[in-house]
Amino acid sequence: MKKIILMSGLATIVMAAFNENAKSASPTDKRGIDNLSNATANTGVSVVVQDSTALKVVNAFFDKFKSGASPAELAKSFDEKAEMFIPGDIKNVPWIGKRIGRAAITDHFKLLRENIKPEKLEFTDILSKGNRVVILGYLESRMKKNNKVMKSEFSIDIVVENGLITRYHLLEDSFEVSGKAKL
Image 1 (tube, helix red, strand yellow):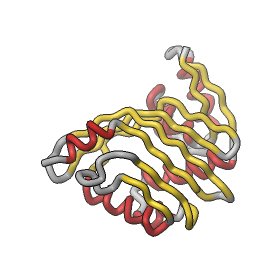
Image 2 (image 1 turned 90 degrees about the horizontal axis):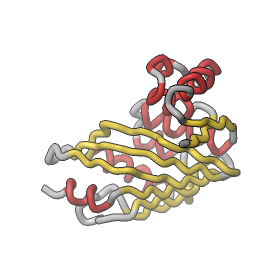
Image 3 (image 1 turned 135 degrees about the vertical axis):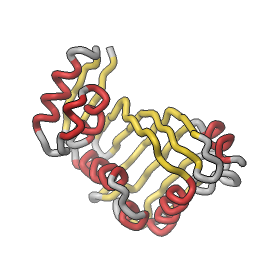
Image 4 (image 1 turned 60 degrees about the vertical axis):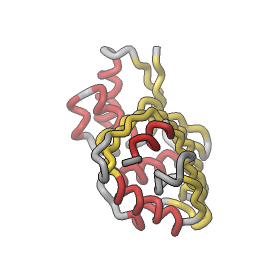
C-alpha cells in the first residue's frame, strides 16, 4: 500500500489526482482533507495528515508557482543566501545548475519561464520532518523553442529556516531534459 504524508494546503493539490470534487477546495478548506480521506478508500493509498511550518512555506511557494507569480515574487520565498541546485547539462538547459541567493534564483525562474511551458505537475508523495520537506512526483514541460515535451519523475529536497526556503535541490531525468532542450 502506498503511503502519502500530506500537510496543509498541499493536500489540495494531491487530492485532485484522487477526487474530481477536490479541485475546487482551497488550501485551508477542511473539507479537502475529508475528501482526500474518502477518495483513498477506492485507491489503496493511505494518508497521514500532519502540519508544519516548513510545509506551510512550501505550500505557499507552490501556490504562487501554480498561480503564475512573477520570477521576483517566487524568489521572495527564498532566503537571501538560499541555494538552489538542479544538476544537469547547463550548456543546453540554461535554467538548471547551482544558484546561490535570491537574485540568482530570480534569474532561474526568468529562464524557466522563457524556455518552457509547464504542462503537468503531479506530487505523488510529500514527506515532512522538522524543517525539511521532500516532494516526489512527475512533471511534463514543453520546450518553447522546439515544441518537444520533456517527461520526468522528480524529487525535490527543500529546507526552510525562519520562514524562508534555504535549500531547494531538484533531481529529475537530466538526460531527458537535455535531449529535449536541443534543437
